Image (cartoon, one colour):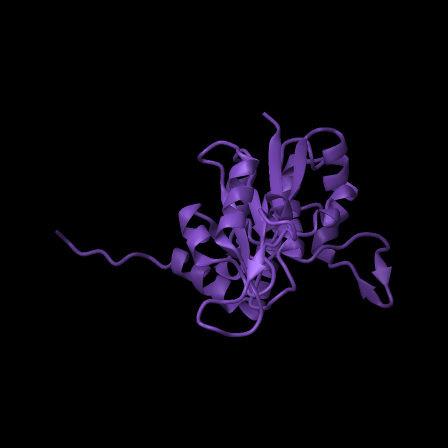
Amino acid sequence: MTWRATVLTLFPETFPGPLGVSLAGRALAAGLWALETRDIRDSATDRHRSVDDTPAGGGPGMVLRADVVAAAIDAAGGAPDRPKLLMSPRGRPLTQSRVMELAAGPGPLIVCGRFEGVDQRVIEARGLEEISLGDYVLSGGEIAAMALLDACVRLLPGVMGTAESGAEESFSHGLLEYPHYTRPQAFEGRPIPDILLSGDHAKIAAWRRAEAEALTRERRPDLWAAQAGQKAPKNTTDG
């Protein structure tokens, strides 16, 4: 079965955008995955195709209506166990492990929020999983949805030229990726580290691991703390 993504958005013309080029675009053209975009406004019931209203309790902005979003989700159909996602700055941060889970499934349905957000009742009623790309706010969920889909699509069978390409990347083993080098051997007085030209694969692997650990310690202390916790020996007592 082809991995299929369905995106519910107020701006379907945004897609495929970057997903139509490079790895994702070639895979889309080859039928390795499928992308369906649906306009949330098609589920509006009035002649103005209204999708939002003022926040209950007052406040600025507008909120996407529960009935309209629910109708759009229901119209999209799909298997009951299909992941239903809402791109939201208050969601759980997207991780590589979650990307791998999504890539191994049938493909998600993604709701792209706008304005002040989506009525909480439809989030609960349709079991939407809120996902965030980081601690910042975008104008809408479309760009975030593209990032999530790109991360998933590149892991699908046949998309990357070499399956091993996805195995040694940042976050694959809880660490940031080690530095990479290629020709020329010297660039503005900076040579490729000698160890990488030695042909000693064991020493190269050890160097790469050490570099990955050093980068992670420096740039992502949260990841390093988790990595260190995994390494820490468990306390044992004599029974």
